[in-house]
Length: 240
Picture (spheres, one colour):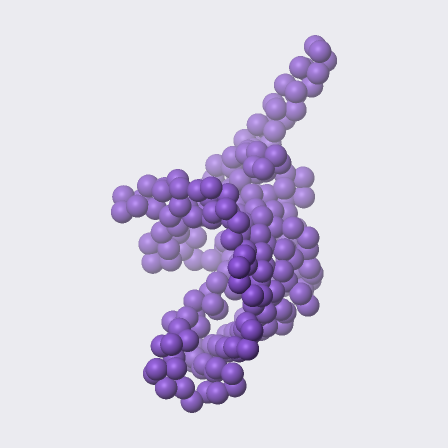
């Protein structure tokens, strides 16, 4: 029993030292080195599919094309018999519904289609599938303090990230494997008017498996849950 107790103390002390000895900037640097060792993100040009499974809803299959050098983004989403397509090409937006590009205001409204939505999807997919590299973007504030946290039975090095007001008000936490520095979980919370975290808001996303695209290691499976009650939301599966 004495040896077990000593072992536990040594293990805990080691983990505390790991968290204390690494800064937020260094943790991010190591995570990017794991995911993007050859610095390919800024020249990223690839196409892939994302299959979304949601409770009580049919699958949605989204074909994504992200070309960062050409400032081009396209998402073609298929659910049941409905096919919607958004393109953002150097800031110019185009929309189609079941192959039709000349859409009335009534058609756009009834199908919830807009250039605002197009830009939202571009930012959403580019952000999530560009992590952790996107944490280098302007307006991103990286905490210098790294926390050690056990989440769902596993230890992580946790990086807290906030954003300039022009970028967003949510508070994010990124969970990295302490041995490989792979990003394995991220979590966000909403804030109130005073900037305080609303603890029962937001979601966490569990990442598993890996696909390599353009020499970048990208999580293949993303399972989404509510922070409030761990209720399951959806799963995104990346397919090449």
